[in-house]
Amino acid sequence: MFLIRWALNLLRLVAETLLALTLLMLILLWGLNWIPFMPVPVIQKHFSERVPQWGWAGSDEIPQRLLHALQEVEKLPTFHKPTAIPAKVAVQMFYPERSRGTGSFFLGEILALLWSERRLWIFHANSVCFGEDIYGVKAAAARLWHKKLSELTPEEIAELAVRTHWPHPHSTLPATLQREKRLLLRKVLS
Image (cartoon, rainbow, N blue to C red; front, side, top):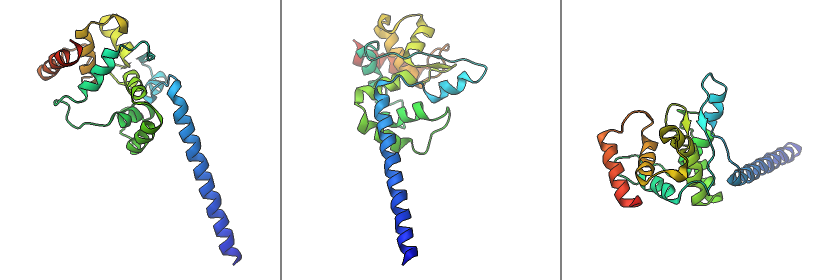
């Protein structure tokens, strides 16, 4: 009888601890909603010999056209294997580069519950890799066109959105992506 009571108390203690840790994790994830959070690959590269380009663009800095273009580029037919944006944000923000992360779907679903859709798109825009150690739309606009986000033309916004799937910043887009850029320009930004 004593052993059973001891086991039940231990089980209750473990359950309470797991619940407390889960609540703490949810509170921390919810709190990140207002904090400019540097993606894990950027943090890792700071400890290597190559320093990445990254800068946080707040919701007031990212043009609405750019957020809309990023949303529409995910729907284009060229980009098969659609991934939900919450899962992409989870991978971009919390997992090392070239690592899918087994819990990204579940972490993404938790983020979708805690954050607004607009906030998820802002985090996506600030953490997407454009190749050659360029992370985020602010750094990509500065590196590719030497401009601020507010100074980008509609064509540059369309190219920036398409380049989220082409991580070679100094090479021209392939023909299929050029076509998608024109389609995106007509559909969203005109």
